[in-house]
Length: 203
Image (tube, rainbow, N blue to C red):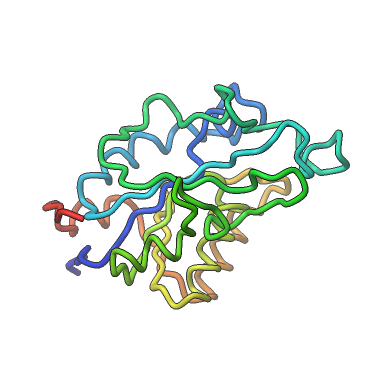
């Protein structure tokens, strides 16, 4: 099967220090996705990176009654992208959950530096299909995949380039089933690397 990557975008979901080992809300093996993601980057005509970007008093933090420890606080090292992530081909950066009283899991709720949503950015590039990688499978990746499908995109989840929080042991596997049942195509990075078209088109 030939994977035609024209009209496609690769979405890097929250590959941030706080979600990797040693971070405030570490996902087990979260840093192990960086290498396959880096290998994928040259194959895509458009790459978009997203970040959690929380204020220190964010509603999702335990001190405010939320479920999580403080993480990805604006301006901190924990909120930065993993240092080994190759950023040269990233065309757009979006940040989400940046106000104290609103939490977001879907990257479609984020905004770029011009105030545009992910949907607006994708439409400006005539993207029809999105490929999702990142952290974490059972939260922000899942929400992004499901929202993308609702908005009419063809969505592909690259399963070896994501990791799950697994609050419950099967949460990651359950999230992948949800994606598949909703209409997403589940593939591995090898499927793309073996079949993809590496020539980037200017955007």
